[in-house]
Length: 417
Image (tube, rainbow, N blue to C red; front, side, top):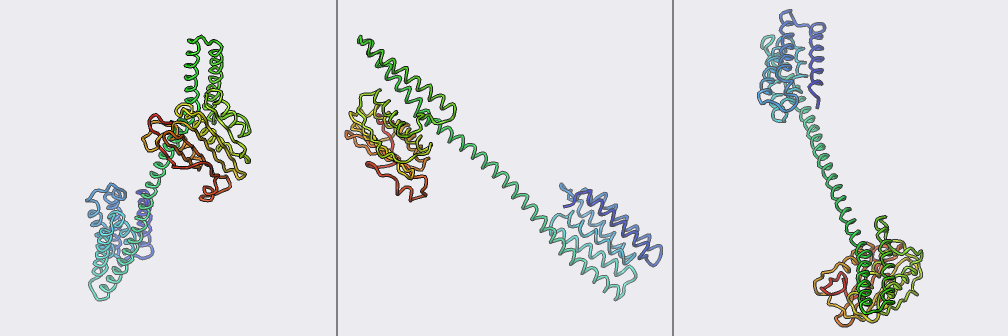
Protein backbone atom coordinates (compact mmCIF):
# COMPACT_ATOMS: atom_id res chain seq x y z
CA UNK A 1 0.00 0.00 0.00
CA UNK A 2 1.15 3.52 -0.82
CA UNK A 3 1.98 5.91 1.98
CA UNK A 4 0.63 9.43 2.39
CA UNK A 5 3.59 10.87 0.52
CA UNK A 6 3.00 8.50 -2.37
CA UNK A 7 -0.65 9.53 -2.62
CA UNK A 8 0.35 13.18 -2.31
CA UNK A 9 2.50 12.81 -5.39
CA UNK A 10 -0.16 10.90 -7.34
CA UNK A 11 -2.98 13.34 -6.55
CA UNK A 12 -0.80 16.35 -7.36
CA UNK A 13 0.53 14.98 -10.65
CA UNK A 14 -2.75 13.53 -11.97
CA UNK A 15 -4.73 16.66 -11.01
CA UNK A 16 -2.19 18.86 -12.77
CA UNK A 17 -2.24 16.66 -15.89
CA UNK A 18 -6.08 16.73 -16.00
CA UNK A 19 -6.11 20.52 -15.58
CA UNK A 20 -3.52 21.08 -18.33
CA UNK A 21 -5.23 18.66 -20.72
CA UNK A 22 -8.57 20.31 -19.97
CA UNK A 23 -7.28 23.77 -20.84
CA UNK A 24 -4.99 22.92 -23.75
CA UNK A 25 -6.42 19.80 -25.41
CA UNK A 26 -10.07 19.34 -24.44
CA UNK A 27 -11.42 22.78 -23.57
CA UNK A 28 -15.15 23.06 -22.69
CA UNK A 29 -17.64 25.01 -24.79
CA UNK A 30 -17.04 28.29 -22.97
CA UNK A 31 -14.84 29.93 -20.37
CA UNK A 32 -17.42 29.55 -17.59
CA UNK A 33 -17.41 25.81 -17.96
CA UNK A 34 -13.62 25.82 -17.90
CA UNK A 35 -13.61 27.75 -14.64
CA UNK A 36 -16.20 25.39 -13.15
CA UNK A 37 -14.18 22.33 -14.22
CA UNK A 38 -10.97 23.76 -12.78
CA UNK A 39 -12.87 24.57 -9.59
CA UNK A 40 -14.02 20.96 -9.40
CA UNK A 41 -10.39 19.83 -9.62
CA UNK A 42 -9.46 22.28 -6.89
CA UNK A 43 -12.35 21.07 -4.69
CA UNK A 44 -11.22 17.49 -5.11
CA UNK A 45 -7.60 18.31 -4.21
CA UNK A 46 -8.72 20.38 -1.24
CA UNK A 47 -10.97 17.57 0.00
CA UNK A 48 -8.08 15.15 -0.25
CA UNK A 49 -5.68 17.47 1.58
CA UNK A 50 -8.05 18.36 4.43
CA UNK A 51 -10.03 15.15 4.83
CA UNK A 52 -8.78 12.19 2.86
CA UNK A 53 -5.02 12.42 3.42
CA UNK A 54 -5.14 11.67 7.15
CA UNK A 55 -7.33 8.62 6.45
CA UNK A 56 -4.82 6.99 4.08
CA UNK A 57 -3.11 5.18 6.96
CA UNK A 58 -4.63 3.88 10.20
CA UNK A 59 -5.89 4.91 12.64
CA UNK A 60 -8.77 6.39 10.64
CA UNK A 61 -11.44 8.61 12.15
CA UNK A 62 -14.92 7.29 11.30
CA UNK A 63 -16.17 10.61 9.90
CA UNK A 64 -13.42 11.00 7.32
CA UNK A 65 -14.70 8.38 4.89
CA UNK A 66 -18.23 9.74 4.41
CA UNK A 67 -16.90 13.31 4.39
CA UNK A 68 -14.32 12.62 1.70
CA UNK A 69 -16.79 10.55 -0.33
CA UNK A 70 -19.22 13.45 -0.33
CA UNK A 71 -16.58 15.94 -1.46
CA UNK A 72 -15.25 13.56 -4.14
CA UNK A 73 -18.76 12.85 -5.48
CA UNK A 74 -19.62 16.55 -5.68
CA UNK A 75 -16.31 17.38 -7.39
CA UNK A 76 -16.57 14.59 -9.99
CA UNK A 77 -20.24 15.32 -10.65
CA UNK A 78 -19.69 19.05 -11.14
CA UNK A 79 -16.61 18.40 -13.24
CA UNK A 80 -18.37 15.88 -15.51
CA UNK A 81 -21.27 18.33 -15.92
CA UNK A 82 -18.93 21.17 -16.87
CA UNK A 83 -16.82 19.18 -19.35
CA UNK A 84 -17.04 15.55 -20.53
CA UNK A 85 -13.25 15.20 -20.18
CA UNK A 86 -13.58 15.76 -16.44
CA UNK A 87 -14.82 12.18 -16.11
CA UNK A 88 -11.07 11.48 -15.89
CA UNK A 89 -11.27 12.62 -12.29
CA UNK A 90 -12.65 9.17 -11.58
CA UNK A 91 -9.11 7.79 -11.91
CA UNK A 92 -8.34 9.48 -8.59
CA UNK A 93 -11.72 9.17 -6.91
CA UNK A 94 -12.16 5.38 -7.21
CA UNK A 95 -8.81 4.22 -5.75
CA UNK A 96 -8.96 6.78 -2.93
CA UNK A 97 -12.46 5.61 -1.99
CA UNK A 98 -11.19 2.02 -1.74
CA UNK A 99 -8.10 3.00 0.25
CA UNK A 100 -9.87 5.30 2.70
CA UNK A 101 -12.90 3.01 3.01
CA UNK A 102 -10.61 0.09 3.94
CA UNK A 103 -13.25 -2.61 3.30
CA UNK A 104 -14.97 -4.27 0.36
CA UNK A 105 -18.39 -3.03 1.38
CA UNK A 106 -17.30 0.59 1.65
CA UNK A 107 -15.25 0.34 -1.53
CA UNK A 108 -18.16 -0.97 -3.59
CA UNK A 109 -20.62 1.49 -2.03
CA UNK A 110 -18.30 4.46 -2.53
CA UNK A 111 -17.63 3.44 -6.13
CA UNK A 112 -21.38 3.36 -6.77
CA UNK A 113 -21.72 6.87 -5.35
CA UNK A 114 -18.90 8.21 -7.57
CA UNK A 115 -20.40 6.49 -10.62
CA UNK A 116 -23.84 7.96 -9.87
CA UNK A 117 -22.38 11.46 -9.54
CA UNK A 118 -20.60 11.10 -12.89
CA UNK A 119 -23.82 9.84 -14.48
CA UNK A 120 -25.82 12.81 -13.15
CA UNK A 121 -23.18 15.34 -14.18
CA UNK A 122 -22.62 13.90 -17.66
CA UNK A 123 -26.33 13.43 -18.32
CA UNK A 124 -27.56 16.84 -17.23
CA UNK A 125 -24.52 19.04 -17.72
CA UNK A 126 -25.45 19.88 -21.29
CA UNK A 127 -29.18 19.40 -20.91
CA UNK A 128 -31.09 16.20 -20.45
CA UNK A 129 -31.46 14.21 -23.67
CA UNK A 130 -31.51 10.62 -24.76
CA UNK A 131 -27.96 10.82 -26.10
CA UNK A 132 -26.59 12.45 -22.92
CA UNK A 133 -28.38 9.94 -20.70
CA UNK A 134 -27.06 7.07 -22.81
CA UNK A 135 -23.51 8.47 -22.78
CA UNK A 136 -23.61 9.19 -19.05
CA UNK A 137 -25.05 5.79 -18.21
CA UNK A 138 -22.52 3.96 -20.38
CA UNK A 139 -19.64 5.85 -18.81
CA UNK A 140 -20.92 5.25 -15.30
CA UNK A 141 -21.56 1.52 -15.83
CA UNK A 142 -18.19 0.78 -17.40
CA UNK A 143 -16.26 2.89 -14.93
CA UNK A 144 -18.10 1.33 -11.97
CA UNK A 145 -17.52 -2.21 -13.22
CA UNK A 146 -13.85 -1.55 -13.81
CA UNK A 147 -13.45 0.17 -10.43
CA UNK A 148 -15.10 -2.68 -8.54
CA UNK A 149 -13.07 -5.33 -10.35
CA UNK A 150 -9.78 -3.53 -9.77
CA UNK A 151 -10.74 -2.71 -6.19
CA UNK A 152 -11.56 -6.31 -5.33
CA UNK A 153 -8.34 -7.49 -6.94
CA UNK A 154 -6.24 -4.97 -5.05
CA UNK A 155 -8.09 -5.76 -1.80
CA UNK A 156 -7.31 -9.44 -2.26
CA UNK A 157 -3.65 -8.66 -2.86
CA UNK A 158 -3.59 -6.50 0.27
CA UNK A 159 -5.23 -9.24 2.33
CA UNK A 160 -2.76 -11.76 0.96
CA UNK A 161 0.11 -9.48 1.97
CA UNK A 162 -1.34 -9.05 5.45
CA UNK A 163 -1.81 -12.81 5.77
CA UNK A 164 1.78 -13.41 4.74
CA UNK A 165 2.95 -10.81 7.24
CA UNK A 166 0.93 -12.51 9.96
CA UNK A 167 2.28 -15.95 9.04
CA UNK A 168 5.81 -14.58 8.94
CA UNK A 169 5.36 -13.13 12.42
CA UNK A 170 4.00 -16.48 13.66
CA UNK A 171 6.87 -18.34 12.00
CA UNK A 172 9.41 -15.99 13.55
CA UNK A 173 7.81 -16.47 16.96
CA UNK A 174 7.75 -20.26 16.46
CA UNK A 175 11.42 -20.26 15.44
CA UNK A 176 12.30 -18.26 18.53
CA UNK A 177 10.36 -20.73 20.67
CA UNK A 178 12.09 -23.69 19.00
CA UNK A 179 15.47 -22.07 19.59
CA UNK A 180 14.61 -21.52 23.24
CA UNK A 181 13.41 -25.12 23.61
CA UNK A 182 16.53 -26.40 21.86
CA UNK A 183 18.73 -24.42 24.21
CA UNK A 184 16.80 -25.72 27.21
CA UNK A 185 16.96 -29.29 25.94
CA UNK A 186 20.67 -28.97 25.26
CA UNK A 187 21.26 -27.56 28.72
CA UNK A 188 19.18 -30.35 30.27
CA UNK A 189 21.06 -33.01 28.30
CA UNK A 190 24.37 -31.48 29.35
CA UNK A 191 23.29 -31.47 33.00
CA UNK A 192 22.27 -35.13 32.75
CA UNK A 193 25.57 -36.02 31.08
CA UNK A 194 27.52 -34.17 33.73
CA UNK A 195 25.50 -35.87 36.48
CA UNK A 196 26.26 -39.29 34.98
CA UNK A 197 29.95 -38.49 34.65
CA UNK A 198 30.19 -37.23 38.21
CA UNK A 199 28.37 -40.30 39.53
CA UNK A 200 30.44 -42.68 37.43
CA UNK A 201 33.80 -41.08 38.24
CA UNK A 202 34.18 -38.77 41.20
CA UNK A 203 31.32 -40.18 43.26
CA UNK A 204 32.54 -43.75 42.85
CA UNK A 205 36.14 -42.79 43.63
CA UNK A 206 35.18 -40.78 46.70
CA UNK A 207 33.06 -43.68 47.96
CA UNK A 208 36.12 -45.90 47.62
CA UNK A 209 38.19 -43.36 49.55
CA UNK A 210 35.70 -43.50 52.42
CA UNK A 211 35.88 -47.30 52.51
CA UNK A 212 39.70 -47.32 52.50
CA UNK A 213 39.89 -44.58 55.12
CA UNK A 214 37.59 -46.60 57.39
CA UNK A 215 39.74 -49.70 56.81
CA UNK A 216 42.94 -47.78 57.60
CA UNK A 217 41.35 -46.49 60.81
CA UNK A 218 40.39 -50.00 61.93
CA UNK A 219 43.83 -51.35 61.09
CA UNK A 220 45.51 -48.54 62.98
CA UNK A 221 43.33 -49.10 66.04
CA UNK A 222 44.08 -52.83 65.90
CA UNK A 223 47.83 -52.16 65.85
CA UNK A 224 48.28 -53.33 62.21
CA UNK A 225 50.76 -50.59 61.28
CA UNK A 226 51.99 -52.19 58.06
CA UNK A 227 48.50 -52.93 56.78
CA UNK A 228 47.34 -49.42 57.68
CA UNK A 229 50.31 -47.96 55.80
CA UNK A 230 49.45 -50.04 52.74
CA UNK A 231 45.86 -48.90 52.90
CA UNK A 232 46.94 -45.25 53.21
CA UNK A 233 49.10 -45.75 50.10
CA UNK A 234 46.02 -47.05 48.32
CA UNK A 235 44.07 -43.98 49.49
CA UNK A 236 46.79 -41.77 48.04
CA UNK A 237 46.62 -43.56 44.69
CA UNK A 238 42.83 -43.41 44.58
CA UNK A 239 42.96 -39.71 45.44
CA UNK A 240 45.33 -39.16 42.52
CA UNK A 241 42.88 -40.99 40.29
CA UNK A 242 40.09 -38.72 41.53
CA UNK A 243 42.20 -35.68 40.70
CA UNK A 244 42.81 -36.97 37.19
CA UNK A 245 39.10 -37.67 36.76
CA UNK A 246 38.15 -34.17 37.93
CA UNK A 247 40.61 -32.62 35.48
CA UNK A 248 39.13 -34.71 32.68
CA UNK A 249 35.64 -33.49 33.59
CA UNK A 250 36.79 -29.89 33.61
CA UNK A 251 38.27 -30.44 30.17
CA UNK A 252 34.86 -31.78 29.11
CA UNK A 253 36.29 -35.10 27.99
CA UNK A 254 35.29 -38.54 29.17
CA UNK A 255 37.36 -39.61 32.15
CA UNK A 256 38.39 -42.98 30.80
CA UNK A 257 41.75 -44.73 31.06
CA UNK A 258 44.31 -43.36 28.66
CA UNK A 259 45.39 -46.64 27.04
CA UNK A 260 44.77 -46.74 23.32
CA UNK A 261 43.58 -50.37 23.50
CA UNK A 262 40.11 -51.03 24.86
CA UNK A 263 41.13 -54.43 26.24
CA UNK A 264 43.93 -52.85 28.25
CA UNK A 265 41.51 -50.30 29.69
CA UNK A 266 39.16 -53.06 30.79
CA UNK A 267 41.99 -55.01 32.42
CA UNK A 268 43.16 -51.94 34.31
CA UNK A 269 39.67 -51.23 35.61
CA UNK A 270 39.15 -54.84 36.74
CA UNK A 271 42.61 -54.90 38.36
CA UNK A 272 41.74 -51.79 40.34
CA UNK A 273 38.65 -53.45 41.83
CA UNK A 274 40.62 -56.59 42.56
CA UNK A 275 43.15 -54.59 44.55
CA UNK A 276 40.54 -52.66 46.48
CA UNK A 277 38.18 -55.51 47.43
CA UNK A 278 37.99 -59.11 48.51
CA UNK A 279 35.72 -60.35 45.74
CA UNK A 280 37.31 -62.66 43.15
CA UNK A 281 36.83 -61.20 39.65
CA UNK A 282 37.31 -63.41 36.59
CA UNK A 283 37.80 -61.52 33.31
CA UNK A 284 37.15 -63.03 29.89
CA UNK A 285 38.29 -60.59 27.19
CA UNK A 286 39.18 -63.13 24.52
CA UNK A 287 36.24 -61.99 22.42
CA UNK A 288 37.65 -58.49 21.85
CA UNK A 289 38.44 -58.76 18.15
CA UNK A 290 37.41 -55.44 16.60
CA UNK A 291 37.95 -51.79 17.44
CA UNK A 292 35.45 -49.57 19.24
CA UNK A 293 35.02 -45.85 18.72
CA UNK A 294 35.64 -43.51 21.60
CA UNK A 295 31.98 -43.12 22.58
CA UNK A 296 31.36 -46.88 22.69
CA UNK A 297 34.46 -47.35 24.86
CA UNK A 298 33.20 -44.72 27.29
CA UNK A 299 29.81 -46.43 27.54
CA UNK A 300 31.19 -49.92 28.19
CA UNK A 301 33.87 -48.79 30.62
CA UNK A 302 31.40 -46.69 32.59
CA UNK A 303 28.91 -49.56 32.71
CA UNK A 304 31.62 -51.97 33.85
CA UNK A 305 32.77 -49.52 36.53
CA UNK A 306 29.18 -49.04 37.75
CA UNK A 307 28.44 -52.77 37.80
CA UNK A 308 31.62 -53.63 39.72
CA UNK A 309 31.02 -50.76 42.14
CA UNK A 310 27.50 -52.03 42.82
CA UNK A 311 28.88 -55.52 43.49
CA UNK A 312 31.44 -54.13 45.91
CA UNK A 313 28.93 -51.95 47.80
CA UNK A 314 25.75 -54.01 47.78
CA UNK A 315 26.04 -57.57 46.48
CA UNK A 316 28.32 -59.20 49.14
CA UNK A 317 29.40 -61.55 46.36
CA UNK A 318 32.30 -63.98 46.54
CA UNK A 319 32.76 -64.31 42.78
CA UNK A 320 32.19 -62.05 39.81
CA UNK A 321 32.50 -63.00 36.14
CA UNK A 322 33.17 -60.27 33.56
CA UNK A 323 32.92 -61.04 29.87
CA UNK A 324 33.58 -58.54 27.07
CA UNK A 325 33.14 -59.13 23.34
CA UNK A 326 33.77 -56.75 20.43
CA UNK A 327 32.82 -57.84 16.94
CA UNK A 328 34.61 -56.96 13.75
CA UNK A 329 31.71 -54.72 12.75
CA UNK A 330 32.03 -52.62 15.90
CA UNK A 331 29.21 -54.30 17.83
CA UNK A 332 29.99 -55.02 21.46
CA UNK A 333 28.60 -56.72 24.53
CA UNK A 334 29.44 -56.67 28.23
CA UNK A 335 28.21 -59.18 30.83
CA UNK A 336 28.85 -58.84 34.56
CA UNK A 337 27.51 -61.72 36.72
CA UNK A 338 27.85 -62.15 40.48
CA UNK A 339 26.74 -64.73 43.07
CA UNK A 340 25.69 -62.12 45.63
CA UNK A 341 22.46 -61.46 47.47
CA UNK A 342 20.56 -60.14 44.41
CA UNK A 343 17.48 -57.93 44.58
CA UNK A 344 13.87 -57.69 43.45
CA UNK A 345 13.61 -55.51 40.30
CA UNK A 346 9.90 -54.90 40.95
CA UNK A 347 10.59 -52.82 44.06
CA UNK A 348 10.77 -48.99 43.77
CA UNK A 349 14.18 -47.49 43.21
CA UNK A 350 16.10 -44.98 45.30
CA UNK A 351 19.44 -45.07 43.50
CA UNK A 352 20.89 -43.47 40.40
CA UNK A 353 23.38 -46.08 39.19
CA UNK A 354 21.29 -48.36 36.99
CA UNK A 355 19.12 -45.46 35.84
CA UNK A 356 22.18 -43.50 34.76
CA UNK A 357 23.65 -46.61 33.13
CA UNK A 358 20.42 -47.19 31.21
CA UNK A 359 20.36 -43.59 29.98
CA UNK A 360 23.98 -43.74 28.86
CA UNK A 361 23.41 -47.00 26.95
CA UNK A 362 20.21 -45.69 25.35
CA UNK A 363 22.03 -42.60 24.05
CA UNK A 364 24.51 -44.93 22.35
CA UNK A 365 21.65 -46.86 20.69
CA UNK A 366 22.21 -49.99 22.77
CA UNK A 367 20.26 -52.01 25.32
CA UNK A 368 20.72 -52.72 29.00
CA UNK A 369 19.33 -55.96 30.46
CA UNK A 370 19.36 -56.70 34.21
CA UNK A 371 18.43 -60.11 35.59
CA UNK A 372 18.35 -60.55 39.35
CA UNK A 373 16.74 -62.88 41.90
CA UNK A 374 16.97 -62.39 45.65
CA UNK A 375 19.63 -64.77 47.02
CA UNK A 376 20.75 -65.91 43.55
CA UNK A 377 22.87 -63.04 42.28
CA UNK A 378 22.59 -60.50 39.48
CA UNK A 379 23.56 -60.40 35.83
CA UNK A 380 23.98 -57.13 33.94
CA UNK A 381 24.20 -57.28 30.13
CA UNK A 382 25.00 -54.34 27.88
CA UNK A 383 24.76 -54.57 24.09
CA UNK A 384 25.87 -51.93 21.59
CA UNK A 385 25.11 -52.14 17.85
CA UNK A 386 27.74 -52.12 15.14
CA UNK A 387 28.70 -48.85 13.48
CA UNK A 388 27.90 -50.15 9.98
CA UNK A 389 24.35 -51.29 10.78
CA UNK A 390 21.04 -49.49 10.69
CA UNK A 391 17.76 -49.84 12.54
CA UNK A 392 16.53 -53.23 13.50
CA UNK A 393 19.36 -55.08 11.74
CA UNK A 394 21.87 -53.62 14.18
CA UNK A 395 19.83 -54.60 17.21
CA UNK A 396 19.05 -58.06 15.91
CA UNK A 397 22.70 -58.76 15.10
CA UNK A 398 24.10 -57.61 18.43
CA UNK A 399 26.23 -60.05 20.38
CA UNK A 400 23.99 -62.11 22.69
CA UNK A 401 25.58 -62.80 26.05
CA UNK A 402 24.07 -63.98 29.33
CA UNK A 403 20.46 -63.83 30.51
CA UNK A 404 18.31 -60.81 29.74
CA UNK A 405 15.26 -60.76 31.99
CA UNK A 406 14.15 -57.18 31.59
CA UNK A 407 15.15 -53.67 30.58
CA UNK A 408 14.65 -50.33 32.26
CA UNK A 409 14.58 -51.94 35.69
CA UNK A 410 14.10 -50.01 38.91
CA UNK A 411 16.40 -50.40 41.87
CA UNK A 412 14.87 -51.09 45.30
CA UNK A 413 16.16 -49.52 48.46
CA UNK A 414 19.29 -51.32 49.55
CA UNK A 415 19.85 -52.84 46.11
CA UNK A 416 22.68 -51.86 43.71
CA UNK A 417 22.49 -48.19 42.79
